[in-house]
Image (cartoon, rainbow, N blue to C red; front, top):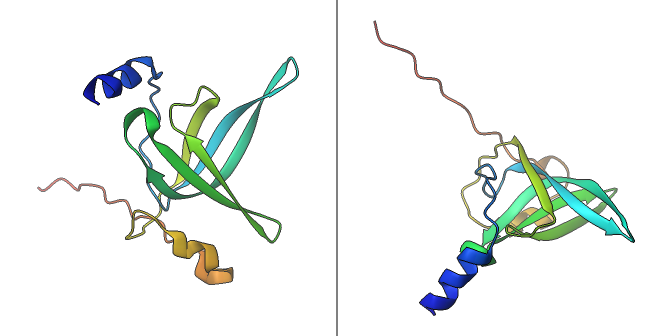
Length: 122
């Protein structure tokens, strides 16, 4: 199993994506091939979960399209994932926030993490 895992890590293209976790609002730039043409589509939503390790790692992003919730699973090592931008850091206590699916209205909001700056002592 270790040999298989090493081969997967060697073959998987390593990209430098920003650190993100569940509760964060991100924008995924995804390459779409339509015949011979290629375009990049933006998919913005909240990260519901990250799962797996190494070459098999995936993350699920949920967004609201009209009144319908749409979830999409992206493999982190996919050659079609062009760029990931973290728009907002969310303050959640769980690694998988499936309870978010049943929420609507104000209860579907996620608090933003507060950023503390170090103040030098005099």
